[in-house]
Image (cartoon, rainbow, N blue to C red; front, top):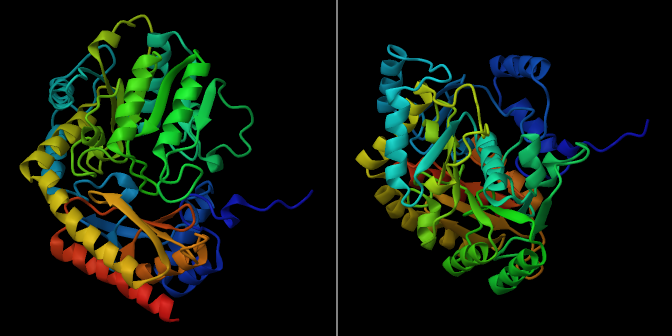
Length: 451
């Protein structure tokens, strides 16, 4: 049998899991106790790209920090995008303890006040979107959205961007554009059309959103079976930020051709961009909004779709029918998350820290030729590393080296697309903590470029 190169041995979306640098990290930077646990982890858990082998073993997570079994703290600038409130927020922990002493589960065909209060609160914040369905995870939220779009439009095709990620279930993988999730899976769900995304720094539409919009309209005009356009409002993995003109025009095109606009804000809603929902930056309203990850406050898995009340006409179809779809625990977590964002003025806090982060990262770019591009919004930023600013060749090896140097000094983040350092801290991070984390990053750049 011919030996095949493992996808884990290639540069893919996320960490570089089986490189020599990873092996050196596990050998030199991980305690004996943690190594024993990591060996057990590898023995019992299925191996998969982007997740294994693990970097370390955690013992605690509080605020902006995660702590390993040896007591070492890392600033978590990854957080699986669930850490809008940081970790173990005391008000959220207290609310969940209170809910545990009351109703812990809501059997189907029954409802509960906690879930109703959450639905009322959420829809009060999404003007024009009045109905929700709760679901345990983001993939299933996107799945519900796709089913609803078919029911509303009577069309079965979906348009999405290449290189997009919307979830890991087979139906959602089918409509996403990230290849690593589709490898060796066989035939995908039919009826998916993909177009290149409007990328500002590299790609065929570099700094030319008009061409991207022309292509979008061309595809919509040619195929009247497209019923939904699924996209992240702001692309999370490598911090791609479309212009207001792009989204306002795309919204008009969807209306013109009878296509529902489904915005996936699962990783970037709830304040990450400086507004509660990213679409608020663009003065548009989607037809269906998908939420998840941070909706459960980093403790309870919780997701939801929010949509227009005129679409609530399919009571003969089970759009979701998930066991925990009116979970009082999930609803308590989501309601409390929204309360904390308001009470602690986290949106204003993010906008303030955005200026600080932008200034420091722009200075980094000025100081180090290795940085080809800096882009971001709120507390979502990408630093794209290149071996040459002229050719824009990806500096993937350098990105990995900087990541491990930062890990040694207590800063954890994801490397996206092989060469983009994605920086995504807790929204509750303090100004002092952010400065400390960015100093770790600067020191790593200095050490690596001097070497």
